[in-house]
Each structure stands twice: as structure tokens, then as C-alpha cells.
Amino acid sequence: MKKGSRMSPESRERCRQAQLIVQKDPDLRERMRLANTGKKRTLETKKRMSENNCARRPEEKERRRLLLLGKKIGLGNKGRTSETFTPEHRKVYAKRTRAYFSSLTDEQWEEWHEKNSRGHKWSGTSIEKILESILLEREISFEKQYRIGRYVVDFADLENKVAYEADGEYWHSSPKAVARDKKRDEYLEERGWTTIRFSESELPSQ
Picture (cartoon, rainbow, N blue to C red):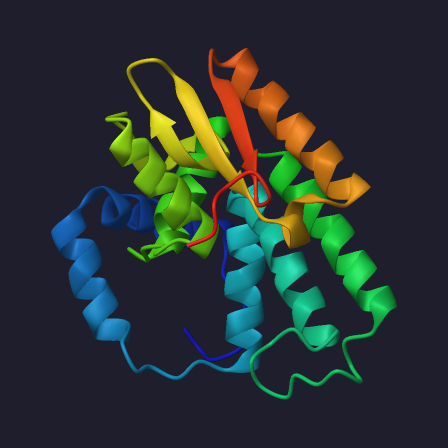
């Protein structure tokens, strides 16, 4: 096939069938990945591949739209400046990001978290460490940074389904933060969990 020529419907169908075979065979998929490593593609080819991915997976279209928006308003690591990231841009980006993540089911949230966490471990804030020591002193068994659906709680008593949260004044004292925490608590309550919150002022200093 000549470069730039259009594929016939029959050729497209053969390519589609070949891609299905590759997707079902992990060994073949790995060989294809290695064969394409370091391969340079033209902008036209990249654009075509992006459009094909969006056609196959509707959620990919929204993800790429957010990615392009991030590049336009200076969210990328390269060339990111405060001048290009204005308050108006922040509002637009935040609104679209919330809309996208709000549309995800619990299973999709779990899948997204597994793909993007990359094994990072949260060491905890100072007040979380204080609360952790208190729970240990009282011999309460718990899991740190435990995920329940789309949320991660500071400490989770799995046996009694109790979530313990250490709320810093800076992040949890504003009216907006209080409303957000209330919505989060209601979400956990619907799944049989009780949330016990400790404000920074209620916890002893180190």
C-alpha cells in the first residue's frame, strides 16, 4: 500500500480482525509492543490512531479532551507557567474533571486507581500519625489508606466497618470542605460504613 492511500473496507476489516487476534494473545501483543518501541510516527498517523481509539472507547474521547485542554491552558510539565494557567482556566478544567470522574462507577474508579497509583505509598500527615498512635494504644485493628469505592479513608476498622478520619483545619474547615466531607460520609454510610472524624484541635499535639 502506498503512503497516504486510503484503505478499502475489506482491508479495514482484515486489519480489525488482526488487531482482535493481537489483543487476545498476550505474547503476540508483547512482541508487537517491542517491535514498535522507539518507532517514530508522523503527526497525521498519531491523529488517526487517536481518532480510532476514541471511536472504540467513548471514555477515551473524554480523557483525551481533558488532556488537550490541559495542554492548551498550560497544565503540561513542559512550558507550564502561572501566566498561562489563569483562574478562568482552573475553573473550566476543574469543572470538566469533576464531570468526568463523577460519571465513573465504583468499578471504573477502582480500575483508574490501580492504573495510576503506581505503587505510591502515603506516609501520612502529622495529625494522621497522632491518630494512628491513639488507635494502636487502644488496640483497634485497622488498615491505613483503605479504599472504599471512590474514596480512600485514613484508617479503616474492617471488622466493625468504621472509618477514622483525621481532619486538618486548613483542608476541612471551610464551608465547601464541610459539604464535601458530608457527601463523602453519606457515600460511605450507604455502603454500611460509619465515619468518625477527629479535627486537628481535638487531637493532642506531638
